[in-house]
Image 1: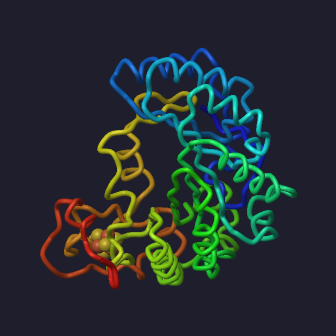
Image 2 (image 1 turned 120 degrees about the vertical axis):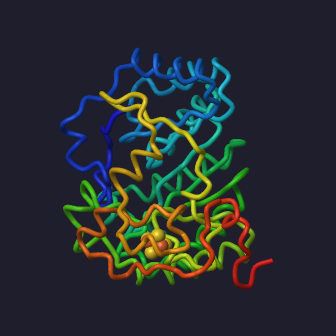
Length: 314
Ligand code: SF4
C-alpha cells in the first residue's frame, strides 16, 4: 500500500523509497482488494511500509472482512499494536493473522537495529495484546550481522513467547542487501557461511520444542538437511503484489528475476531446478564463492524436499 513507516530500521529494504513514493489512497486500495476477491483470491496481506500508521487501516480490513477472505494478514513492526483498543478494532474487522518483526530478542540490540527508542517496550506490549485474541501470530527475524550469533538464543526466546499465542510460527529471513541494508551493509550483512550453522542451531531448538520455524533467502547448498524449512519451496505458486504504481506483478517471478542470482556453476547442482540462489545484492557484495553445486540426482519437485527428514528429526 506504500512505504511510509514510523521506524527506519537499519536492515530495511525500502530505504529512501519511502520518501519518494506516495502511499496508495483508500479508494485505490479498496479497488485492489475488490479485484483480488473477484479473481478468486482468498488470502490478503496488508504490508508496507508500516500499514498501521494509515488512518484507514481498520476501514480497509473491515472492507476486506466483508468480502469473505479466509485469511487477512497484517505485517507490522508491532508498535501500534501496543494499543489494545486499536488491535481489538482490527480483530473485530476481520484480521486473522499478525506478523511482527523481531530482529533481535535483546532490547538494546532490537532498538539499535530498528532505530526506535522505546520500540522494544511497544513490541512486548503488542505481544501481550495479540495473546488476548484468537489470532495466528508470526514473528519475522531478519538475519543481520549484529544479531546473527544470538540466533539460537532468539529461537529459545521465541519458544518461550509462543506458548501464550493461539497459533504461532516464525520466520528467519536473510537480510536483503537493498535500501538501508545496502547503505549499511558493512555493519548489517553477515556472511552466509557464518549465518547458516547458526540458523541450523536455531532450527534444531525450534524442532525440539515442536514449533514451526522456517527460513527464507538462504540457498539449498547452505541448508543441507534442513530443506523442509525453506519458505521459497513452499510458497504459493502465484501471488500478486500491488503497491503504488504497480498492479498485477507476479511476486515469485519478480523475486527470482530481479532480486536473486545464480551462476553458470549452478547448472551442475542437483537443486538447480528448484533453487533461486542468494540475493543478487549479496553476490554483489561478497561474490559467489560460498555457493557450491551439490552432486546427486537432480531434484525437480520441491515437494520431495519439503518431506526430507532432518538430522535427529522424526
Ligand atoms: S549451487 Fe546454486 S543452485 Fe545449487 S544450491 Fe547453491 S545457489 Fe542453489
